[in-house]
Length: 236
Image (cartoon, rainbow, N blue to C red; front, side):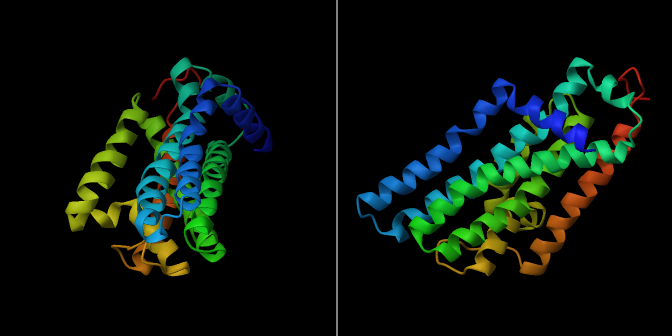
């Protein structure tokens, strides 16, 4: 499993796709620094930068780029056959890919959110955002990894989930929030360090349980889906 993880990391950072991970974190940090340096009150920019940009855009988009990249490209170009011919359980392959995706997404998202949280409020708030981002990265990564195995357009479907389900319906249709990873992250961060900048729309138990369901359920379905691939890389 460690070999698969190493190959995944090397492949991920050896592609131009890795460069796409930089703009959003830099934008979050840059906006926070600018607002803080010019003396704008955190109540006026904190929610827009931390929640509107960091949690609602940077975290899911970074997770989408990484989550669909750790396995999706191998499915598309047929090199998945080299992995499937190895004497490795499908479970180990998926878990290795998921850990890499979640780890990279968590670090890339948590660092700018921590900095923005410290600039907006306190170290405690920054740590709360980082912890919540790690939970969100795991749930998003499991979902997007699964999408890369069930469709040839995982990025498109991922964007539909982020922009339409979470971005549009999640803000106006209350029933959809139960299936919104963004809402779980906001609720967890707000519970760890309550501020006026965050307002979770689901309860803490729902946020924790549903995040686990996304993470575990997505992983199990991905393992099952990979198990349906033949050595030729086709689905049976």
